[in-house]
Amino acid sequence: MTQDIYPFPLKRIGIIGGGQLGKMMAMEAKKMGFYIAILDPTPGCPASQFADIQLMGGFYDKAQIRLLVEQSDVTTYDIEHIDTEILLELEAEGHSIHPSPKVLATIQDKLIQKEVLSAGGVPVPRFKRLDSVNTKQFADFGYPCVQKTRKGGYDGRGVYVVKNAEGAEKAMQAVSMIEEFVDFEMEIAVLAARSTDGEIRCHPVVEMLFDARANICDMVIAPARIPAEVEEEARRVAMKAIKVLGGVGIFGVELFVTRDGKILLNEIAPRPHNSGHFTIEACETSQFEQHIRAITGLPLGSTRLLSPAVMLNLLGEPGFNGNQLIEGLEAIHRIDGLTLHLYGKLTTIPFRKMGHLTVLDADAEKALQKCYQAKEIFKIKGEESL
Ligand SMILES: Nc1ncnc2c1ncn2[C@@H]1O[C@H](COP(=O)(O)OP(=O)(O)OP(=O)(O)O)[C@@H](O)[C@H]1O
Ligand SMILES: [Mg+2]
Image (cartoon, rainbow, N blue to C red; front, top):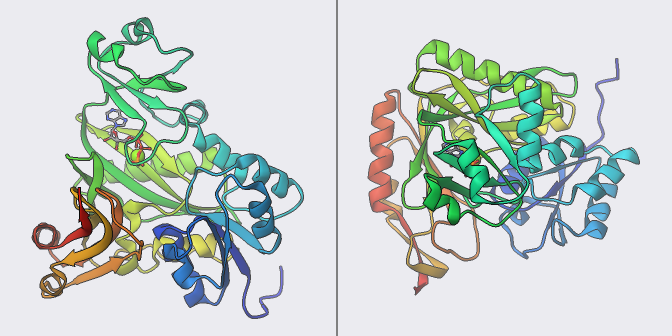
């Protein structure tokens, strides 16, 4: 056993990506006594508010990635679209990078991710590799199905539902895969963290509601309104998936609950996840603290839910660009149990994630009503009308 004695600051953590997830990681890490360096191309990016230093550079800038990793005791990331080649090289040189670049490379490619999980016995929708995009491949697979680009998709970009032959004609000309269209009852998510000594802990299972206009996650309800056995199965599937993938840190596991109560895994993010923001106010250990604990070799924290909660994503109002003009700030602060998070992005664009708010209420339905109320009155507009 190693001695439980540390110098201060405890460790230097490098974070690739300085968006809202990087910011909230950095906030927790600073609170806990770590030194933070971030790599991001945007001056004044959200995480820079809590970083000791920012390196300027993109996520495929091998030289800057090397510089960050070499000056950090451990490196992590808040985004999965990163050059894995350089990360694999640095890991092989003995640098500590969590989750491992090997896991990141598997997850980055939605097809490889599904192949690895499915081979490991994790339930996933039926899927097929698309070697070329032609209507016959869709017809052979069967309609309705969903075409997904293998790499680079996010917030629903790179996902295309193909209902029939006519839809197949308009398929994306991209390196992609197809899977069966799951006529799900509900979309749920679980945050699962693994520590350096292999312990896995899950946060409560949550329900995701989507904004129909942009097919983007809009609200998250904790706990999900599902029977105990479905919740148990969701945790089991999430833990199994993390075991199959390997790696240290927190993972956002997105799942479908089918109409007959079965769980199918949709996708995994190797980082804190939008569906886990409620944990900041509602759980004994937030997803961000859990991630920092995991990657720095500390024991995982308790994931106990302190109160039911609903999180609302604050998306840039459609029709506006530019410097933010925020409406309803005073009004939402009259809602009991509400906490506002504004990420500090310099400009808004339609449906950009600008912040979120969380409402705690002993009665989850009341928390949901308060969120609907907040959604009505709070708008992030921009100085330029489109
Ligand atoms: N096989 C499927 N059947 C039905 N709906 C699906 C399927 N796959 C994806 N979807 C819908 O499309 C959404 C986005 O898909 P997915 O999560 O794969 O893409 P993404 O762009 O990587 O996601 P994110 O919004 O998490 O960044 C899902 O949340 C779900 O609503
Ligand atoms: Mg998704």
